[in-house]
Length: 459
Image (cartoon, rainbow, N blue to C red; front, side, top):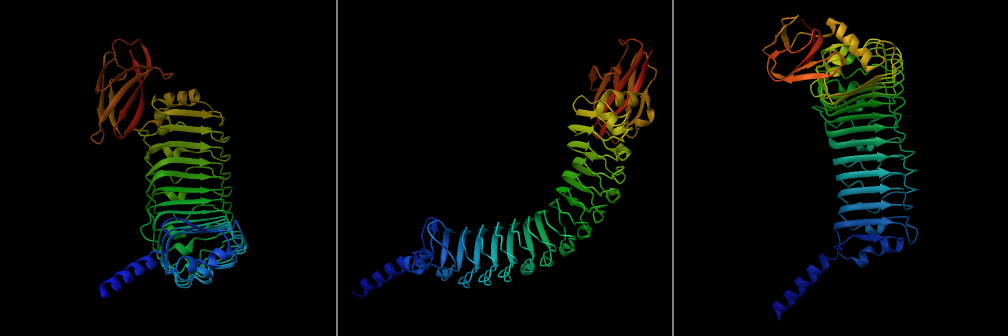
Protein backbone atom coordinates (compact mmCIF):
# COMPACT_ATOMS: atom_id res chain seq x y z
CA UNK A 1 0.00 0.00 0.00
CA UNK A 2 2.85 2.34 0.90
CA UNK A 3 4.52 1.68 -2.47
CA UNK A 4 1.24 2.41 -4.24
CA UNK A 5 0.92 5.71 -2.38
CA UNK A 6 4.46 6.74 -3.38
CA UNK A 7 3.72 5.83 -7.01
CA UNK A 8 0.53 7.97 -6.98
CA UNK A 9 2.50 10.82 -5.40
CA UNK A 10 5.16 10.66 -8.11
CA UNK A 11 2.54 10.59 -10.85
CA UNK A 12 0.76 13.59 -9.30
CA UNK A 13 3.99 15.53 -8.86
CA UNK A 14 5.09 14.86 -12.43
CA UNK A 15 1.70 15.84 -13.77
CA UNK A 16 1.62 18.98 -11.68
CA UNK A 17 5.12 19.99 -12.78
CA UNK A 18 4.28 19.45 -16.42
CA UNK A 19 1.27 21.80 -16.39
CA UNK A 20 3.16 24.31 -18.57
CA UNK A 21 1.85 23.87 -22.10
CA UNK A 22 4.10 22.05 -24.56
CA UNK A 23 2.99 24.17 -27.53
CA UNK A 24 2.67 27.88 -28.26
CA UNK A 25 0.14 29.52 -25.95
CA UNK A 26 -1.86 32.60 -27.00
CA UNK A 27 -3.63 34.56 -24.26
CA UNK A 28 -5.96 37.02 -25.97
CA UNK A 29 -8.16 38.31 -23.14
CA UNK A 30 -7.62 39.66 -19.63
CA UNK A 31 -9.63 36.73 -18.29
CA UNK A 32 -7.27 34.23 -19.96
CA UNK A 33 -4.32 35.92 -18.28
CA UNK A 34 -6.01 36.07 -14.90
CA UNK A 35 -6.84 32.33 -15.12
CA UNK A 36 -3.32 31.31 -16.13
CA UNK A 37 -2.40 29.85 -12.73
CA UNK A 38 -5.68 28.01 -12.54
CA UNK A 39 -5.34 26.51 -15.98
CA UNK A 40 -1.62 25.77 -15.66
CA UNK A 41 -0.90 25.09 -11.97
CA UNK A 42 2.74 25.05 -10.89
CA UNK A 43 3.88 26.40 -14.28
CA UNK A 44 6.93 28.52 -13.59
CA UNK A 45 9.34 27.46 -16.32
CA UNK A 46 7.72 28.22 -19.69
CA UNK A 47 9.70 26.37 -22.39
CA UNK A 48 7.52 27.33 -25.37
CA UNK A 49 6.27 30.58 -26.92
CA UNK A 50 3.89 32.72 -24.88
CA UNK A 51 1.94 35.33 -26.86
CA UNK A 52 -0.11 38.09 -25.23
CA UNK A 53 -2.24 39.77 -27.86
CA UNK A 54 -5.60 41.50 -27.77
CA UNK A 55 -7.99 39.92 -30.19
CA UNK A 56 -10.95 38.85 -28.07
CA UNK A 57 -10.92 41.53 -25.38
CA UNK A 58 -9.05 44.32 -23.60
CA UNK A 59 -5.77 43.40 -21.87
CA UNK A 60 -4.65 45.87 -19.20
CA UNK A 61 -2.23 43.96 -16.97
CA UNK A 62 -0.12 40.80 -16.79
CA UNK A 63 -0.44 40.12 -13.07
CA UNK A 64 -1.98 36.70 -13.74
CA UNK A 65 1.42 35.50 -15.01
CA UNK A 66 3.03 36.12 -11.62
CA UNK A 67 4.32 32.53 -11.05
CA UNK A 68 6.60 32.59 -14.09
CA UNK A 69 10.34 32.74 -13.52
CA UNK A 70 11.49 31.77 -17.04
CA UNK A 71 9.98 32.26 -20.52
CA UNK A 72 11.74 30.99 -23.60
CA UNK A 73 9.88 33.25 -26.05
CA UNK A 74 7.60 36.05 -24.85
CA UNK A 75 5.63 38.24 -27.27
CA UNK A 76 3.46 41.10 -26.02
CA UNK A 77 1.61 42.77 -28.86
CA UNK A 78 -1.26 45.23 -29.29
CA UNK A 79 -2.34 45.38 -25.65
CA UNK A 80 -3.27 48.21 -23.29
CA UNK A 81 -0.84 47.32 -20.52
CA UNK A 82 0.97 50.25 -18.87
CA UNK A 83 3.89 48.22 -17.55
CA UNK A 84 4.84 44.67 -16.58
CA UNK A 85 3.89 44.80 -12.92
CA UNK A 86 3.04 41.38 -11.55
CA UNK A 87 6.05 39.67 -13.13
CA UNK A 88 8.45 40.46 -10.32
CA UNK A 89 9.60 36.82 -10.08
CA UNK A 90 10.55 36.59 -13.74
CA UNK A 91 14.34 36.21 -14.09
CA UNK A 92 15.11 35.08 -17.65
CA UNK A 93 13.51 35.67 -21.06
CA UNK A 94 15.41 34.28 -24.02
CA UNK A 95 13.40 36.26 -26.57
CA UNK A 96 11.24 39.27 -25.66
CA UNK A 97 9.20 41.09 -28.28
CA UNK A 98 7.13 44.10 -27.20
CA UNK A 99 5.33 45.67 -30.15
CA UNK A 100 2.51 48.16 -30.66
CA UNK A 101 1.25 48.50 -27.09
CA UNK A 102 -0.43 51.89 -27.12
CA UNK A 103 -0.41 52.61 -23.36
CA UNK A 104 2.93 51.10 -22.35
CA UNK A 105 5.09 53.70 -20.56
CA UNK A 106 7.88 51.55 -19.09
CA UNK A 107 8.92 48.04 -18.04
CA UNK A 108 8.30 48.30 -14.31
CA UNK A 109 7.79 44.81 -12.94
CA UNK A 110 10.76 43.26 -14.74
CA UNK A 111 13.37 44.37 -12.20
CA UNK A 112 14.35 40.75 -11.46
CA UNK A 113 15.09 39.96 -15.11
CA UNK A 114 18.85 39.67 -15.51
CA UNK A 115 18.99 38.05 -18.94
CA UNK A 116 17.19 38.71 -22.24
CA UNK A 117 19.02 37.21 -25.19
CA UNK A 118 17.02 39.09 -27.82
CA UNK A 119 15.06 42.23 -26.91
CA UNK A 120 12.85 43.87 -29.53
CA UNK A 121 10.85 46.95 -28.54
CA UNK A 122 8.94 48.63 -31.37
CA UNK A 123 5.98 50.92 -32.11
CA UNK A 124 5.01 51.64 -28.51
CA UNK A 125 4.00 55.31 -28.82
CA UNK A 126 3.71 56.12 -25.09
CA UNK A 127 6.96 54.46 -24.02
CA UNK A 128 9.25 57.10 -22.56
CA UNK A 129 11.92 55.07 -20.72
CA UNK A 130 13.20 51.55 -20.17
CA UNK A 131 12.61 51.67 -16.42
CA UNK A 132 12.29 48.12 -15.18
CA UNK A 133 15.37 46.82 -16.95
CA UNK A 134 17.68 48.09 -14.21
CA UNK A 135 18.68 44.52 -13.34
CA UNK A 136 19.42 43.47 -16.91
CA UNK A 137 23.04 42.35 -17.16
CA UNK A 138 23.02 39.91 -20.09
CA UNK A 139 21.74 40.51 -23.63
CA UNK A 140 22.84 39.70 -27.16
CA UNK A 141 20.53 41.67 -29.46
CA UNK A 142 18.94 44.99 -28.53
CA UNK A 143 16.52 46.53 -31.04
CA UNK A 144 14.62 49.73 -30.20
CA UNK A 145 12.55 50.83 -33.21
CA UNK A 146 9.99 53.61 -33.70
CA UNK A 147 8.96 54.24 -30.12
CA UNK A 148 7.99 57.83 -30.73
CA UNK A 149 8.37 59.12 -27.15
CA UNK A 150 11.36 57.02 -26.03
CA UNK A 151 14.18 59.36 -25.01
CA UNK A 152 15.79 57.66 -22.01
CA UNK A 153 17.77 54.39 -22.01
CA UNK A 154 19.62 54.93 -18.74
CA UNK A 155 18.12 51.76 -17.26
CA UNK A 156 20.46 49.68 -19.45
CA UNK A 157 23.47 50.63 -17.31
CA UNK A 158 23.90 47.03 -16.17
CA UNK A 159 24.75 45.76 -19.64
CA UNK A 160 28.41 45.04 -20.37
CA UNK A 161 28.29 43.36 -23.78
CA UNK A 162 26.06 42.89 -26.83
CA UNK A 163 26.22 41.24 -30.19
CA UNK A 164 24.06 43.86 -31.91
CA UNK A 165 22.78 47.31 -30.96
CA UNK A 166 20.09 48.82 -33.21
CA UNK A 167 18.31 52.06 -32.35
CA UNK A 168 16.10 53.80 -34.88
CA UNK A 169 13.13 56.14 -35.02
CA UNK A 170 12.87 57.02 -31.34
CA UNK A 171 13.55 60.37 -29.63
CA UNK A 172 16.90 59.37 -28.16
CA UNK A 173 19.27 62.32 -27.75
CA UNK A 174 21.83 60.59 -25.57
CA UNK A 175 23.22 57.07 -25.29
CA UNK A 176 23.65 57.55 -21.56
CA UNK A 177 23.13 54.13 -20.03
CA UNK A 178 25.51 52.31 -22.36
CA UNK A 179 28.72 53.47 -20.66
CA UNK A 180 29.48 50.05 -19.20
CA UNK A 181 29.36 48.19 -22.51
CA UNK A 182 32.89 47.06 -23.34
CA UNK A 183 32.13 44.69 -26.23
CA UNK A 184 29.76 44.66 -29.19
CA UNK A 185 30.64 41.83 -31.55
CA UNK A 186 28.52 42.43 -34.66
CA UNK A 187 27.03 45.85 -35.33
CA UNK A 188 25.95 49.25 -34.12
CA UNK A 189 23.04 50.68 -36.11
CA UNK A 190 21.69 54.14 -35.27
CA UNK A 191 19.15 55.81 -37.55
CA UNK A 192 16.61 58.62 -37.35
CA UNK A 193 17.66 59.68 -33.87
CA UNK A 194 18.66 63.01 -32.30
CA UNK A 195 21.93 61.70 -30.89
CA UNK A 196 24.75 64.27 -31.00
CA UNK A 197 27.66 62.24 -29.69
CA UNK A 198 28.49 58.57 -29.28
CA UNK A 199 30.77 59.13 -26.30
CA UNK A 200 28.74 56.75 -24.13
CA UNK A 201 30.31 53.95 -26.19
CA UNK A 202 33.87 55.00 -25.37
CA UNK A 203 34.41 51.89 -23.24
CA UNK A 204 34.24 49.65 -26.31
CA UNK A 205 37.51 47.78 -26.87
CA UNK A 206 38.57 45.73 -29.89
CA UNK A 207 35.42 46.56 -31.84
CA UNK A 208 35.65 45.07 -35.36
CA UNK A 209 31.98 44.83 -36.37
CA UNK A 210 29.91 47.16 -38.55
CA UNK A 211 28.91 50.78 -37.96
CA UNK A 212 25.75 52.10 -39.60
CA UNK A 213 24.70 55.73 -39.08
CA UNK A 214 21.70 56.78 -41.13
CA UNK A 215 19.71 60.02 -41.11
CA UNK A 216 20.86 61.32 -37.73
CA UNK A 217 20.41 65.06 -38.10
CA UNK A 218 22.47 66.09 -35.04
CA UNK A 219 25.27 63.51 -34.99
CA UNK A 220 28.74 65.05 -35.32
CA UNK A 221 31.06 63.23 -32.93
CA UNK A 222 32.68 59.83 -33.59
CA UNK A 223 35.53 60.09 -31.10
CA UNK A 224 34.23 57.02 -29.26
CA UNK A 225 35.91 54.97 -32.02
CA UNK A 226 39.38 56.50 -31.86
CA UNK A 227 40.99 53.13 -31.11
CA UNK A 228 39.25 51.16 -33.85
CA UNK A 229 41.59 49.81 -36.54
CA UNK A 230 39.33 47.39 -38.41
CA UNK A 231 35.63 47.28 -39.32
CA UNK A 232 33.33 45.06 -41.35
CA UNK A 233 31.32 48.00 -42.73
CA UNK A 234 31.29 51.76 -42.20
CA UNK A 235 28.30 53.72 -43.48
CA UNK A 236 27.54 57.35 -42.69
CA UNK A 237 24.53 58.50 -44.70
CA UNK A 238 22.28 61.58 -44.44
CA UNK A 239 23.88 62.93 -41.27
CA UNK A 240 23.45 66.68 -41.67
CA UNK A 241 26.04 67.90 -39.14
CA UNK A 242 28.92 65.57 -39.98
CA UNK A 243 31.92 67.53 -41.25
CA UNK A 244 35.20 65.65 -40.97
CA UNK A 245 34.50 62.24 -39.33
CA UNK A 246 37.12 62.85 -36.64
CA UNK A 247 37.42 59.72 -34.54
CA UNK A 248 38.33 57.26 -37.29
CA UNK A 249 42.00 58.20 -37.50
CA UNK A 250 43.30 54.76 -36.51
CA UNK A 251 41.20 52.85 -39.05
CA UNK A 252 43.29 50.64 -41.36
CA UNK A 253 40.91 48.08 -42.89
CA UNK A 254 37.23 47.92 -43.84
CA UNK A 255 36.34 44.43 -44.97
CA UNK A 256 33.21 45.32 -46.92
CA UNK A 257 31.48 48.66 -47.58
CA UNK A 258 33.00 52.11 -46.99
CA UNK A 259 30.13 54.51 -47.76
CA UNK A 260 29.42 58.20 -47.28
CA UNK A 261 26.40 59.79 -48.89
CA UNK A 262 23.96 62.69 -48.53
CA UNK A 263 26.09 64.42 -45.90
CA UNK A 264 25.69 68.11 -46.79
CA UNK A 265 28.43 69.39 -44.42
CA UNK A 266 31.04 66.68 -45.03
CA UNK A 267 34.12 68.51 -46.32
CA UNK A 268 37.08 66.24 -45.60
CA UNK A 269 38.21 62.62 -45.53
CA UNK A 270 41.63 63.56 -44.17
CA UNK A 271 41.03 61.55 -41.00
CA UNK A 272 41.40 58.31 -42.99
CA UNK A 273 45.13 58.75 -43.56
CA UNK A 274 45.83 55.27 -42.14
CA UNK A 275 43.25 53.44 -44.24
CA UNK A 276 44.86 50.84 -46.52
CA UNK A 277 42.14 48.43 -47.61
CA UNK A 278 38.38 48.48 -48.22
CA UNK A 279 35.85 46.20 -49.82
CA UNK A 280 33.86 48.78 -51.80
CA UNK A 281 34.23 52.56 -51.93
CA UNK A 282 30.97 54.47 -52.23
CA UNK A 283 31.01 58.29 -52.03
CA UNK A 284 27.97 60.20 -53.26
CA UNK A 285 25.89 63.36 -52.74
CA UNK A 286 28.30 65.14 -50.38
CA UNK A 287 27.84 68.81 -51.29
CA UNK A 288 31.04 70.28 -49.84
CA UNK A 289 33.52 67.47 -50.44
CA UNK A 290 36.19 68.81 -52.80
CA UNK A 291 38.75 66.01 -52.79
CA UNK A 292 39.52 62.51 -51.57
CA UNK A 293 42.54 63.77 -49.64
CA UNK A 294 43.21 61.36 -46.80
CA UNK A 295 42.90 58.20 -48.89
CA UNK A 296 46.49 58.31 -50.17
CA UNK A 297 47.42 55.18 -48.19
CA UNK A 298 44.57 53.20 -49.72
CA UNK A 299 46.06 50.51 -51.96
CA UNK A 300 43.36 47.84 -52.08
CA UNK A 301 39.71 47.93 -53.14
CA UNK A 302 38.14 44.50 -53.51
CA UNK A 303 34.73 45.36 -54.93
CA UNK A 304 33.06 48.41 -56.48
CA UNK A 305 33.99 52.09 -56.66
CA UNK A 306 31.18 54.64 -56.91
CA UNK A 307 31.93 58.37 -57.03
CA UNK A 308 28.57 59.94 -57.79
CA UNK A 309 26.81 63.32 -57.61
CA UNK A 310 29.37 65.19 -55.53
CA UNK A 311 28.96 68.77 -56.82
CA UNK A 312 32.23 70.14 -55.38
CA UNK A 313 34.49 67.15 -56.01
CA UNK A 314 37.44 68.17 -58.21
CA UNK A 315 40.33 65.96 -57.14
CA UNK A 316 40.48 62.16 -56.88
CA UNK A 317 44.26 61.85 -57.15
CA UNK A 318 44.33 60.29 -53.67
CA UNK A 319 43.32 57.01 -55.33
CA UNK A 320 46.53 56.92 -57.37
CA UNK A 321 48.08 54.09 -55.35
CA UNK A 322 45.05 51.79 -55.47
CA UNK A 323 45.70 48.55 -57.35
CA UNK A 324 42.88 47.52 -59.66
CA UNK A 325 43.20 43.79 -59.00
CA UNK A 326 40.02 42.59 -57.33
CA UNK A 327 37.93 45.58 -58.45
CA UNK A 328 34.71 44.60 -60.23
CA UNK A 329 33.11 47.94 -61.23
CA UNK A 330 34.03 51.63 -61.29
CA UNK A 331 31.44 54.38 -61.83
CA UNK A 332 32.44 58.06 -61.83
CA UNK A 333 29.44 60.16 -62.76
CA UNK A 334 27.72 63.51 -62.27
CA UNK A 335 30.55 65.27 -60.49
CA UNK A 336 30.38 68.58 -62.42
CA UNK A 337 33.72 69.97 -61.15
CA UNK A 338 35.78 66.82 -61.72
CA UNK A 339 37.90 67.43 -64.84
CA UNK A 340 40.91 65.20 -64.08
CA UNK A 341 40.46 61.52 -63.31
CA UNK A 342 43.27 59.88 -65.30
CA UNK A 343 45.22 58.74 -62.26
CA UNK A 344 47.07 55.42 -62.27
CA UNK A 345 44.15 53.56 -60.69
CA UNK A 346 41.51 54.77 -63.13
CA UNK A 347 43.80 54.21 -66.11
CA UNK A 348 44.52 50.62 -65.08
CA UNK A 349 40.77 50.04 -64.72
CA UNK A 350 40.01 51.34 -68.21
CA UNK A 351 42.46 48.92 -69.82
CA UNK A 352 41.33 45.90 -67.84
CA UNK A 353 38.60 44.06 -69.81
CA UNK A 354 37.47 42.25 -66.66
CA UNK A 355 36.39 45.48 -64.92
CA UNK A 356 33.14 47.23 -65.78
CA UNK A 357 33.50 51.01 -65.95
CA UNK A 358 31.26 54.03 -66.49
CA UNK A 359 32.47 57.64 -66.68
CA UNK A 360 29.97 60.30 -67.63
CA UNK A 361 28.51 63.75 -66.86
CA UNK A 362 31.61 65.08 -65.13
CA UNK A 363 33.61 68.12 -66.28
CA UNK A 364 35.40 68.11 -69.63
CA UNK A 365 38.45 65.87 -69.35
CA UNK A 366 36.62 63.32 -67.24
CA UNK A 367 33.42 63.18 -69.18
CA UNK A 368 33.58 59.77 -70.85
CA UNK A 369 35.60 56.56 -70.95
CA UNK A 370 37.23 57.37 -74.34
CA UNK A 371 38.14 60.85 -73.12
CA UNK A 372 39.85 59.56 -70.00
CA UNK A 373 41.47 56.67 -71.88
CA UNK A 374 43.03 59.14 -74.32
CA UNK A 375 44.51 61.12 -71.44
CA UNK A 376 45.81 57.91 -69.88
CA UNK A 377 47.65 57.09 -73.12
CA UNK A 378 49.15 60.54 -73.49
CA UNK A 379 50.26 61.04 -69.90
CA UNK A 380 53.19 58.91 -68.76
CA UNK A 381 52.91 60.37 -65.28
CA UNK A 382 49.67 58.48 -64.82
CA UNK A 383 51.52 55.17 -64.49
CA UNK A 384 53.73 54.12 -61.62
CA UNK A 385 56.69 51.79 -61.87
CA UNK A 386 56.38 50.12 -58.50
CA UNK A 387 55.47 46.74 -60.02
CA UNK A 388 57.57 46.66 -63.19
CA UNK A 389 61.24 47.59 -63.42
CA UNK A 390 61.19 47.99 -67.19
CA UNK A 391 59.36 47.21 -70.40
CA UNK A 392 61.97 47.17 -73.16
CA UNK A 393 63.03 47.82 -75.77
CA UNK A 394 60.78 50.76 -76.54
CA UNK A 395 60.48 51.28 -79.49
CA UNK A 396 60.40 47.55 -80.18
CA UNK A 397 60.83 45.56 -83.41
CA UNK A 398 60.43 41.94 -82.31
CA UNK A 399 60.69 40.74 -78.71
CA UNK A 400 59.32 42.85 -75.85
CA UNK A 401 60.58 41.94 -72.37
CA UNK A 402 58.91 42.82 -69.08
CA UNK A 403 61.11 42.87 -65.97
CA UNK A 404 59.02 42.56 -62.79
CA UNK A 405 60.04 43.85 -59.41
CA UNK A 406 60.62 41.02 -56.88
CA UNK A 407 57.45 41.88 -54.98
CA UNK A 408 55.12 40.96 -57.86
CA UNK A 409 54.35 37.78 -59.79
CA UNK A 410 53.03 37.91 -63.34
CA UNK A 411 49.38 37.09 -64.00
CA UNK A 412 49.15 38.14 -67.64
CA UNK A 413 50.45 40.50 -70.33
CA UNK A 414 47.89 41.98 -72.74
CA UNK A 415 48.75 43.86 -75.94
CA UNK A 416 45.99 46.26 -76.94
CA UNK A 417 45.11 48.87 -79.53
CA UNK A 418 44.88 52.41 -78.10
CA UNK A 419 41.09 52.22 -78.39
CA UNK A 420 40.98 49.29 -75.98
CA UNK A 421 40.69 46.39 -78.44
CA UNK A 422 42.72 43.43 -77.28
CA UNK A 423 45.28 41.91 -79.66
CA UNK A 424 46.81 39.11 -77.61
CA UNK A 425 47.27 37.76 -74.12
CA UNK A 426 50.40 36.07 -72.81
CA UNK A 427 51.51 34.62 -69.51
CA UNK A 428 55.19 35.07 -70.37
CA UNK A 429 57.42 38.03 -69.60
CA UNK A 430 58.72 38.00 -73.17
CA UNK A 431 56.24 38.66 -75.99
CA UNK A 432 56.90 38.49 -79.72
CA UNK A 433 55.45 41.59 -81.42
CA UNK A 434 57.10 41.12 -84.81
CA UNK A 435 53.74 40.55 -86.51
CA UNK A 436 52.35 43.95 -85.47
CA UNK A 437 52.29 46.92 -87.86
CA UNK A 438 54.17 50.10 -87.07
CA UNK A 439 52.33 52.23 -84.54
CA UNK A 440 51.38 52.90 -80.92
CA UNK A 441 50.15 50.07 -78.72
CA UNK A 442 49.33 49.54 -75.05
CA UNK A 443 50.93 46.92 -72.83
CA UNK A 444 48.74 45.96 -69.85
CA UNK A 445 50.76 44.07 -67.23
CA UNK A 446 48.65 42.38 -64.58
CA UNK A 447 50.49 41.14 -61.50
CA UNK A 448 49.52 39.62 -58.19
CA UNK A 449 49.77 43.10 -56.68
CA UNK A 450 48.00 45.11 -59.35
CA UNK A 451 47.92 46.23 -62.96
CA UNK A 452 49.84 48.90 -64.87
CA UNK A 453 49.58 50.17 -68.44
CA UNK A 454 52.43 51.40 -70.65
CA UNK A 455 52.65 52.86 -74.16
CA UNK A 456 54.91 50.99 -76.56
CA UNK A 457 55.93 52.09 -80.07
CA UNK A 458 56.25 49.31 -82.66
CA UNK A 459 58.92 49.99 -85.36
